[in-house]
Length: 375
Image 1 (cartoon, one colour):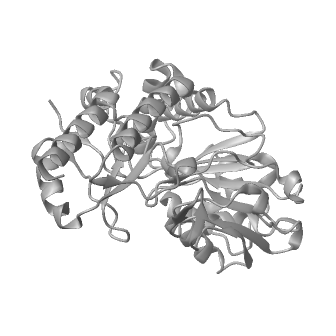
Image 2 (tube, helix red, strand yellow):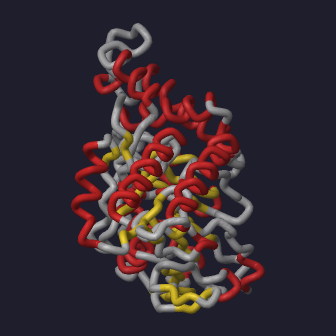
């Protein structure tokens, strides 16, 4: 039996996908070539790309007026690519950001290179919620408190903070915030494909693939077509969304093998019953793990209950002197990559789509046994 992989990314892939990729490694569907050897403009890879886009559109019910782009550079590169493409809309040169953790702060910092960047809301201070003092970045600013500028080119949101374990999915109607012409741009990297997306609220959604969609190397951008064609003159041509869309994501050589694996993941998700079915599985997994934490005297979850992520579950031991022993014994039990991010410490279990309930139950059983021995 394979160990259970709780890595935050690159993360677990479905075993079926890995097995199919292994079977097709040297010869894809009888063509005599590996996908890694194909011309990206040949009929075989064109079929792979087209199927991947069609399956993704089906999974997320992507509207017809949105482009699906397969890009390079990861979500970190999008921190620059987004303003390079969008901040020139309307000539204002402004963009607003909601700050909710480490990743949204990185996005905000990068965007400052390209224009007038303001903070529309932030959870970077302590706040008392439900009678409990919440540390910075463990809660999410309520949407009705956001203050976007009506003439901003876009409002940026990170909807799931991988490090902090904060998830926000009740995206606001921008008109209700007094900014009806400001498109909402969402970095959904670490919960992409784990739940449906409301494209009536989001004008653009992007995600690094290496959480739920495939291996590192391809970044998925789903963008409304009216946002194309506004790139700054300094934007590299290979990162201009209009160029990428016009060339069906083949303006330059795309990350072909990563797109192929992502396509296999999309087909696997369809076989599971689609995003609605996988969401129910994710609810069951996360509820079980949080119930374990909340019922424990040894472990604690730092995140406010209303915005706990279903995908990334950080937790701490009340006695942090036990951290090294916990991690060593977990690994010996086949529970891998549970160490928290270096910036926050503690533990983190990333329970993405490919981690089944069985794996989460194995983690819970270990945690309870460890507490029984050390509580």
